[in-house]
Image (cartoon, rainbow, N blue to C red; front, top):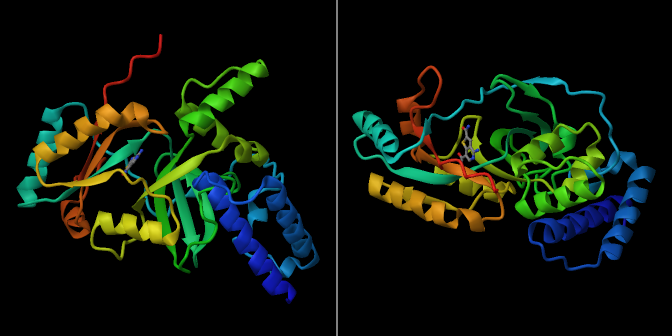
Length: 312
Ligand SMILES: NC(=O)c1cc2c(N)ncc(C(N)=O)c2s1
């Protein structure tokens, strides 16, 4: 088999094994077998650097220690959501929407308690990952984000797209991390969000790879080709991006509030922290019609759960 085909086969095999291990939590090969194949690929790549593929797992390792964070100017501004803390405030949002949209269909999604992330793909290849910053200028954390196992280095289609999402630390990895820090006599992180933020601010990317961060992508920043938010999310999944599966449609306040209450009861059983529910007008042309206030989109609201009492 020629070297290029060997490299392609090894890369695809290793990426499949990594997906089984990290995302499906169901590895089909022993670590030793993965390591053997990985070393074989790394050897072939070092002998044929021109044949290294963009989706090679060797981009996710290697001890890149950065000297600092470069600033990154977002092509598409990251906006914040208006918060709601009561049913009445969500009702007021719904009433404002109905002033312009007769019979809105909403999509309700979980509000992940992590760190905002912007991913820029060019020709389907991850070019830049950046923090939100002030919404216009963030920090370039591309090398760190390449160490988040569920972020695809290459999408299933060679498209240019800018997506928004959240990087978070799954609760089980948060507990493991704090246990290890206690062992080492280091201060523990107060919550998974702080741990995720602290991890992505690590200049030593080897540390990021060990911590087990994960992502949920939830918004297209570049002009969407889909008609609705629901279709955007389905498209993201097709591209290989991770999308949260807890999302429902609602056409009135009762359905919205039923979902909020359902989420409030199941929140503690989730594998990750959330701090609310995001309600959005599903139709993207209606989102454009509604537009923005000075600060927020008028087509979405973030219902925030009452802050959980700190564990005493
Ligand atoms: N600041 C924002 O615009 C958002 C923040 C978040 C978040 N932390 N989690 C989920 C969503 C979502 N599903 O839309 C959004 S949207």
